Length: 82
Image (cartoon, rainbow, N blue to C red; front, side, top):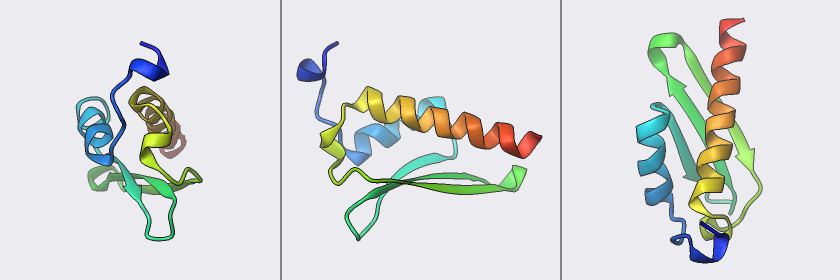
């Protein structure tokens, strides 16, 4: 699906998709006008954040957000296992 035909990305839509593939990962919009990823896995002792300098959620397609979030999620878990 091309970027032009993808549904408009919203925080709710992105986070619903993330719930299915990466539990404990959330995309949050900061009041300062940027986004950040949160990986919160208390059972594993993992809490990490990463700022994303994208001002509007709908600037990127949902698949972009999900792919980027999953990359951060996997990297965070790998670093904590090392």
